[in-house]
Image 1: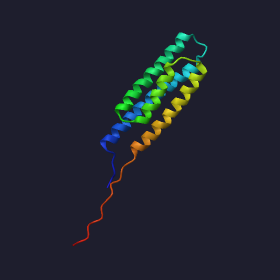
Image 2: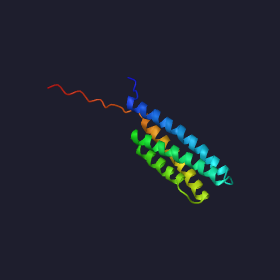
Image 3: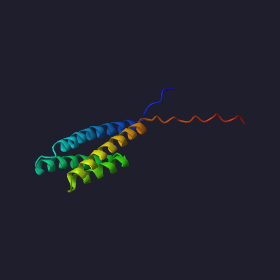
Image 4: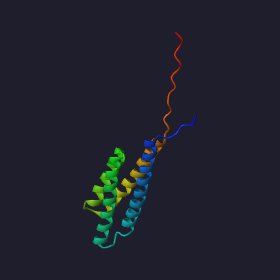
Length: 127
């Protein structure tokens, strides 16, 4: 008998794969932010707004999909990107957060892909 993923597992895997695309985009934006440290403040603020918006939207979608750990990390990244303060501290936090989010997504994908084996009950002894 071939074990298959349930519909719920397939939906969760699809959602996690969409989250991974958002994380890749955010990673690209963080790299762009790091490369353009000397850019005008308006440009840096715009990049930070994009990161904050992506992470905030991802947090909301993760909450609706009931993936709490991803929602927590995405929420903290959204706050970090939106707050003021030194650029070095913000960059370090964003880079670490994106890395953490990637690891959380890989773990969530691994857990969602696990096939639950149904235990077979031994036959009842004849009376």
